[in-house]
Image: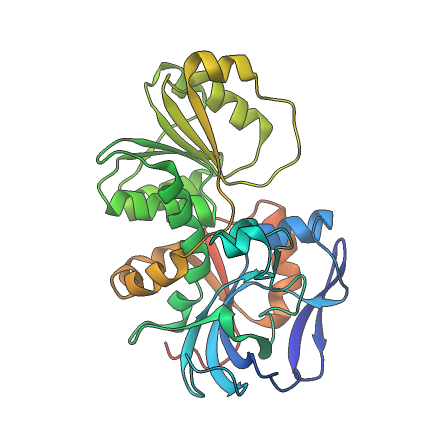
Length: 333
């Protein structure tokens, strides 16, 4: 079968590989229909931050159809279309037992610790799939995972009804947070150096375009950063109002940018937002209503063979849209 595998830093290849093994009792096999390229995929390719096995079939955002199930799997059946939970958790640690698997002590992700969805077929734990809502196209189902990340960030922020949110970064997660926030009545001001992306997002959601320098004269108490950029985060910390909350979603590099005395005196709460908890099930229920609003976010649908060159194009900053999807199998629309 066709697959895209990560061999090491900067080494991503379109390969022909053996089909996955038949599912174990607690596993399922999927025919993958559509997958998405995530910023963390690009980060891993560029830095090797999470390479724990190689070569590994990449991809943790995808949807597909069940083609085989293990004998202990009962919540889905062969022929079901499903959305996929990207987290690979142990189920045993205190975090997992406490219902916060997104901070599992052994947390990994599909496409890293086990093979992922940049392939025609994949076998994965049955607990990682949920039956998809009826009538939603596979290109929209493949966006369930990043939508769950976006919803998790908003849930952690506890933004009061109608309050403004500053959003830095208009990539996939920033764009989807903006979509969810504006659809629930929050005015959103967006900051990104990519003018094409900010214009697209403003038109799709009604968000207001601003810039980092302008925030010094702007009163705001809720901000979410998806860039992971130290300069951007430092700018937000220095300009956000007192008694405020700043959510950090983007993954960058470690930096000494936080003055704890400033946080105390200004009552600024920093909120780390990692993956998601139970939001995937919620997004599954929301998808029929969200689906008509997702197409403006899709820049292109590429083939598996195009993935390696697309990684390089995206890392070079050449994207004008927000989300790149990979058409793999029968998409059902």
